[in-house]
Structures are given as C-alpha cells and as structure tokens.
Image (tube, rainbow, N blue to C red; front, side, top):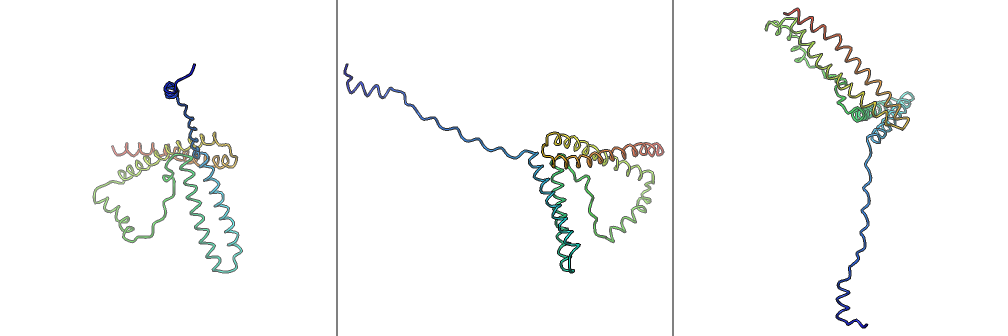
Length: 209
C-alpha cells in the first residue's frame, strides 16, 4: 500500500523523539577528614621541631655574635610557630578550649598596679572584710576554675581516645598517645586539687557560722 505524503508527515510528527541521556555530573571530591587534618598538623609540627633542632645545632657552632643573634631570633620564631601548630592540633583533637591550661604570659612590671596590690589588704580591712571571708572567696574561685578545667580535660581525654581509635598512621597514633597522657594528667591534677579544696572550703564556711 502506498503511503500518501500527508500521512507520512503525520506519522513522523507523532513518532517519539529520543533524546540523548545527559551524562551524570561528576561527584564532588570529598574534603579532608578530621584525621587528615590532624595528620597534616602533626607533620607540620614535627618538621618545625626538626628545624628548631637544626637551628640549635648551628647556634652551638656559630662563629660570631652576629650569627648567634640571627639564629637565636630564628629559634624564637620557630618556637612560636611550633606552639601555634601544637595548639591547633590539640584544639582539633580534643574539641575543647585549651587556653584554660596555657600559662599566662608575664606582664611588664607596673609600679602603680603593684602599689594597688599592696594596698588591697588595707582597703579590705577598712571595709571590715575578715581574713576568713577572703580565704573563702579565694577557695570558691579556685574550685570554680578547677571544676571547669576538670570538665574540659575529661572531654579532651574522651575525644583523644576516639581519635586514637580511628587513627591508622603510626606516627600520628604515637603523638596522639603522648597528648592523651598530657590531658589525663591535667584531668587527674584538677580532680586531686578539687578533692583537697572542697573540705577546706567546708571547714572555713563552718568556722564563719
């Protein structure tokens, strides 16, 4: 049977149009994991410490004062960079605020401030504040600070244990184990001090009443 041109046009129009399937978009690359970041920070810290040791060796063999001064300045800079890397590592590994356990830098001597400190006991006496009351406030403040430190250190220990369990790199595991010992000591020290201070506070409060 011969198909008329008009019918052929209708058939072609009604035929389904096949579209080429669009290729699936490429998967976005995964970002670094927490363990990847820990390993990178540990490696940077290790390299920085190695640079410090090299600079110290050069300092011991320095031929003149100018070279010694240059090397001493470099060692100070490297030390600061290493401390910054260690702090970043611990903040990531522990998930806590490590600044509670950092030593407060010594402030320059201030004569007026020192005189005010010397006068504080006199002012306190003029305000009829007893020695027992001052002691109680000091112990209370210390207990509050230690309670926060114990909580932070306990959380840090738990997070470090979790990181250690997941880590596979041997060097990273060794460093995590070292930091875990440090934070366990911090936790236990805070607990021991709290154990000693709480009865002391109770004794002072009983004496005041």
